[in-house]
Amino acid sequence: MLGAFYFYEYRGGSEDAYYGVEAMYTTGPLTLEAYVSILDSIGSSFGFTIYGVDARYDVNNRFGILAGAATTPDGGSSHLYAGIAYDVSDALTVEARYGQNIDSGGHYDVIWLAFSYSFGGDAKLFGPRDFGTIFPAY
Image (cartoon, rainbow, N blue to C red; front, side, top):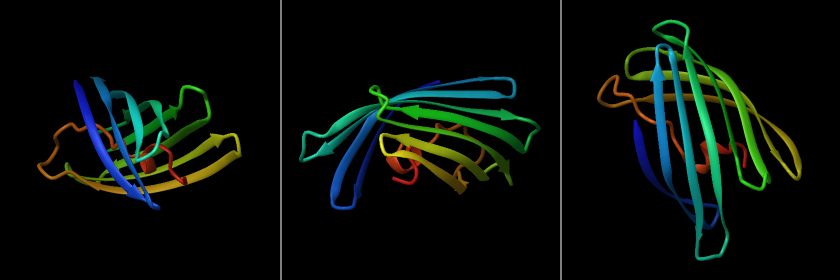
């Protein structure tokens, strides 16, 4: 499956637009996602590209193992994570992740707990691509 996305975010006095393309491939219990995103800081010349991958391996019909990574081309910022997901129902999922943000300032541990609800049931959707999800703790 192929997709495109656009996301606008106002945070801390700055306005940012994210846009990009993404692909998803599922084979048996394994789902892989890959994306390229451009962050454009509105009103300034600041911006960069983000490359990322996410994976989920379904151990059974409710429980999955997660892993992923995102980075900027110059290696200035990266995020790596591993975690677990539990599908409470076809629409409700709980995820717990541990990861690290890595940049020129050092390494930052990140613990993530997320609840997501998909309106419309068990449709296969791409993961979120906002900055706070790709690079948590910034």
